[in-house]
Length: 192
Image 1 (cartoon, helix red, strand yellow):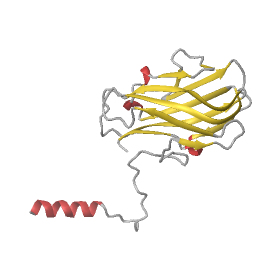
Image 2 (cartoon, helix red, strand yellow; image 1 turned 90 degrees about the vertical axis):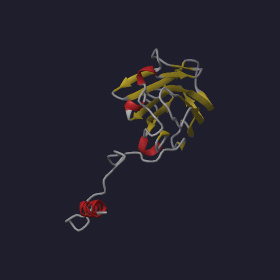
Image 3 (cartoon, helix red, strand yellow; image 1 turned 180 degrees about the vertical axis):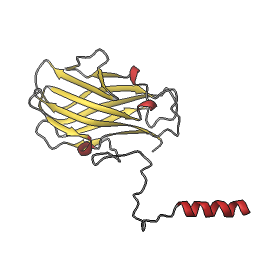
Image 4 (cartoon, helix red, strand yellow; image 1 turned 45 degrees about the vertical axis):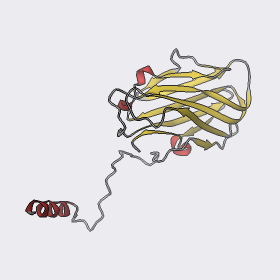
């Protein structure tokens, strides 16, 4: 009984502050910066002239075990004159995924310049494609990212895949770019 009283007193004192309660609230999720995305969705309306909406469809998520395969297919509606695209996806945290085995398969008529379809830039996966046959209009599929959870992943691992950039348009100099703070696009893989 004495132990519970001492423990309660310690917890109460440790929660007190001497600055009148103006201490910042701790950020348990590790989210930082003004552009940090805290809530993800699987579709986003695009305000530019080359595409109207992007969606993520797929399987395997939420994940609950190690080495679980996840497939994210990126679909776009309202394309107008599109010949190229780039997607950047950031795994959070990177240790929750087997990034080295990840593959992006562009959907025809798009082709990708990388063998795995992915170029790593730090922990960010860069994927893209170009149509060599002409402009694309209407609805279409950009491609599918296949990635699996790491060997230390479990049902309690707090992890997600966040789209940090979508760049789409007729050429490398004519593109609409959307960053994560505008898109809020991705999936919660586990724990959230």
